[in-house]
Image (cartoon, rainbow, N blue to C red; front, side, top):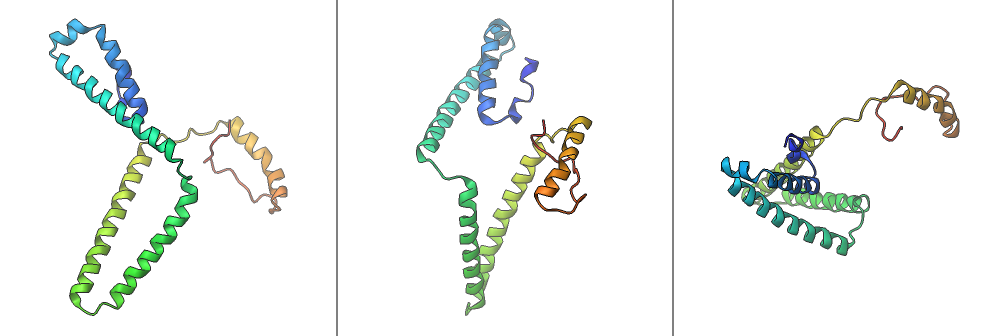
Length: 172
């Protein structure tokens, strides 16, 4: 069962598939599972995993049916709307006639900042759990460096202006 160590850190669809595999493997050890008193736990795990899979599949189907636009298309629009909302909040604060109104607006801004901080923290935690891109081999680095002069010429850059940072994707 050691092959299932760390499945909780996988993507949810991969995790639920791993749980199904683990439960299937545990069927071969039914006597041992019962002797250890784990039968109720494995039964509950199967139930919860099956319920999760149903909910996940339903959400995936809805997402496909909705045909949402790409985030890269939507993000500039949401950023623009957020900017307008912030300007309205600032104007409301500046033109507030009472301290009570200003206090309400300050509370709103504090809550918005708190939510923003929360999402930034979640993003940082998510990024910290991702594995870093492996360092390119010397052969890959040399292959990239060999293409710099042609790229500099194509982009009309000064000769020698490009350098290898080591932060690449898809260099194989």
